Each structure stands twice: as structure tokens, then as C-alpha cells.
Amino acid sequence: MTQLNLPPYQLRVRETNGRKQILDILRRKYVALTPEEWVRQHFIHYLIDHKGYPAPLLANEVPLQIGEKKIRADSVLYDNQLRPRMIIEYKAPTIPLTQKVFEQISVYNLLLHVDYLIISNGIDTYICKMDYDNQTYTFLEAIPDYQDI
Image 1 (cartoon, one colour):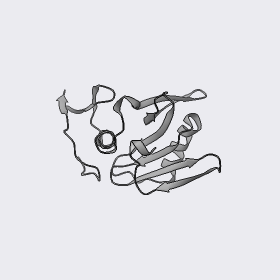
Image 2: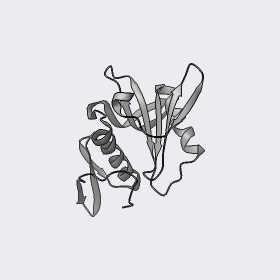
Image 3: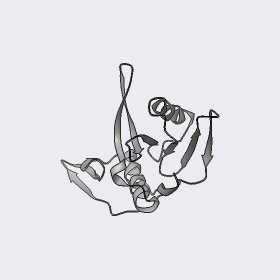
Image 4: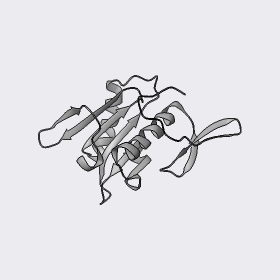
């Protein structure tokens, strides 16, 4: 798999029926090892191990619904009252982070109304802090530590 701009961690990978799988610690199961999943698992471990995000407040593949359409947010961080605070959208390392990706995560945010939006392909990462009072957002230089959000 591609080298990412994220710290390495102790991978738990297995092969079943000729297909590689990686352990998703949040879903507590092995999932298909796709390039996007490679990014997700590294990113989640980075948040937990280096930024102090509590694993019990993070969820992967969060189901959402817009009208009849069912969609899934890649990862969501909740606060202690289980209100969504952050949405994270992942792409494979070869997928550029374009306006279309921002539009995708913005649709999720219409439902969740979070404080932070993050998109990452493991190579590049963009972090937005939302300001709903002024109807603006600010790009941050780095992902804040959990204690700072």
C-alpha cells in the first residue's frame, strides 16, 4: 500500500479467501483492505494515538439519510452527549481532494451541523472550522488536539 503522510501504527492485516483485510478498531471487525480503508485506519489511529481523541466517541461508516437516499459518512467524532462534532471524509491516496470532495462532506454536514470538517487522502489533509454565526469557515494548519476542540 501507499506510504502516507500519517504516522505508522501496528497493523492487523489478514488474508481471507485471497483477499486482504484490515482490522477496524472502531467497528471491531476486519474489513476489506482498500486504498481508502488504508487511509481511514491510519487516520483513526493518528487521532487516537497522537491527538488524544477518545475511541469510544469515534464511529466509522455512519449511516445518514437525505430524503430517500441513504449515504454514509466515513467517520464522525461525537462529544460526551453524543452530539456530532467532526466529520471526516477519506479518499484513496491517488484521488485528488477537489471541490467535489468538499461538496460531498458539506452534504453530510447539512444533516449533522458539526464544528469541524476534515478531508484526507492520507497525503493531503484539509481541516475546516465552521463558524455558523458568521456563515463562514476557516482552514486550520493542523488537526487540533482533542482537548482543544
